[in-house]
Figure (cartoon, rainbow, N blue to C red):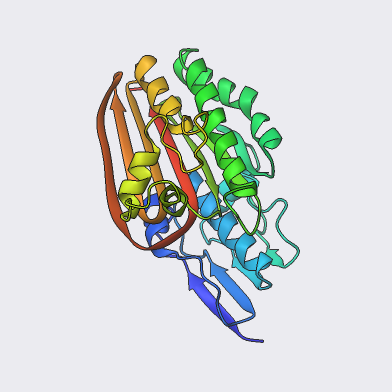
Length: 287
């Protein structure tokens, strides 16, 4: 039985770096070794990408062996975020002894969502996260992000044609200064989905950018295509000091930046390699 080693660089815990270099692929070997030994930092979206990596390879019949981080701080973080929970049987992930399992500022550990009903469950927790962070001003934004989670989960389990059939969600607050919410799926991705209705959108980054606009959807359903815009409008109406929505899918990425109630940027770009599925990161800053 052969194996292929995917050695994750020490700085890949930044979701931007992971999104561009770690291409989910079907290796010819039977076992995939996911080597996290050098990782020194882990962003919530990075953890979701790791879970998606594991689930997809196990679904495709490979065994996955995870080499745990040498950093105790990173290992503690993985435990607090339930990274090792509910893994496929073909995955060997031993995080070893950790100093503490206190969740501290972690509000929502990693969740695997299998239906739109599942996506409603984090609603109260999201509201708690946002109200604790911004003294109750962002209830509308909590609803908007939950709506986005529902749409993305539906993408993964129905028309998204995800082979694994799940979406992932997690959230964290950092020292009362900012919070990060992340969600992802292993479906066909935004660009391919958008080109069903808009075949002229051949640039993946531009296709994602269009998908963030109100009423633009690849389903043809006039009641869809509002999730991302709800999030953007929520950041504007509640006048968060700083809000950033980032999306990666296919060979493109999009960034929407809102400062003090005003959208200052909605930009698209190409990325190296190809991102399987759709991965979203929303960051809210208190100052």
